Amino acid sequence: MNYDQLPAFVKDSSVFTENDKIKLAQVDRLPTPEEVDDVSSLPEIYELLNAFIGDPTTRNIHLQLKSKEYLQDNQLDMAWKVLLL
Image (cartoon, rainbow, N blue to C red):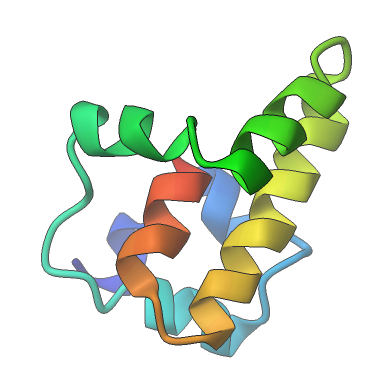
């Protein structure tokens, strides 16, 4: 994927630095919906999703922050899976 193909919510994110966005653009393919669904059952992700049920804006920010943690550990695939929840 090239930088211009990043989803708007990633390009417009204040959580990700420009370098983070460039890293996210280096993926060959985005995870499938099934792969994304699989991470929602991980304890740390499950808790995060449930903590902000009534507040989608805050939930999205926390998902981006979690994704950034994976990105900093060079777990690009996991970073995308969390972002696409």
